[in-house]
Image 1 (tube, rainbow, N blue to C red):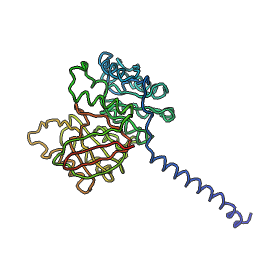
Image 2 (cartoon, rainbow, N blue to C red):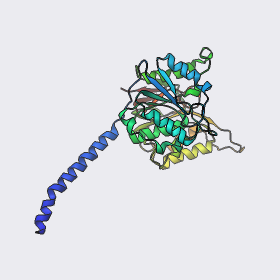
Image 3 (cartoon, rainbow, N blue to C red):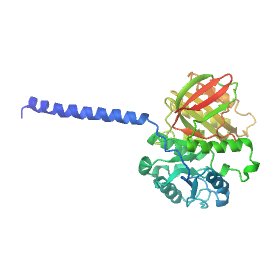
Image 4 (cartoon, rainbow, N blue to C red):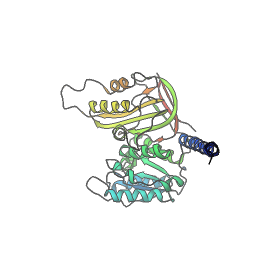
Length: 343
């Protein structure tokens, strides 16, 4: 066959292949930009409770069940509630099967993780989200559940709820502190979606004022750091990042922020929100020599996006429900901080 004719015959096919790849690339890119909210809950919808990390007893989750039922929802308990394998809520296989069953069950509209602890990273790679993608639901929790929030957002672009879990519901609602009541009711508001979430925090001297808009993502700093380099690693470009932690030494927090910085996770943020940090006392009398605020501001000194401290999220009573994967507006002024969910 004539070589010129042969090559010319390939051109239309090559052009079509290039156009197809370009179209697929654009489609993939556009799909990546979309954040998808699962349907909000209505009267009679079912919330499933499971233990993907630490264990919890039937008695301990009863206050949470009663409260969620008072919101008009039905609640079912997974097989891992009451199960125990050392510190875990059952074996890896049991916790995986329980969470997978709830992800696949179309009648369940939200999944409340009973508590944190440790264990989600041991099962996250085995989870199958193929059914979930066609029948999405709200995943609820914080602390170790940050693993699931990051994995879900980075790989599937679905929104989820970072909030208190069953072990944070008071056993006697009449004796609960106002902040406990308010933060737990924020879970109800987030699930029903009847109004846009809005939170405020007092001005903190170390804040960097400014305004920004972006998708909200984040969670426990230690968990976020541990995901670096994995398929579940947090994607922060163009986003508002919030972090919190508990029981860490200042030098360890410094190391974790260096991890984020070296991994490029702080480079292209729209804003940084520092939640509650309960610092572990250093056994070394010399201490670390820097405060939390100094540690953070040192890592972001070359950037100009807004930064706030003491935001009401984390291992503390002031831990409001935040919608990960949903666009928010962050406003930091000398009067205080406002984080507003956008439509």
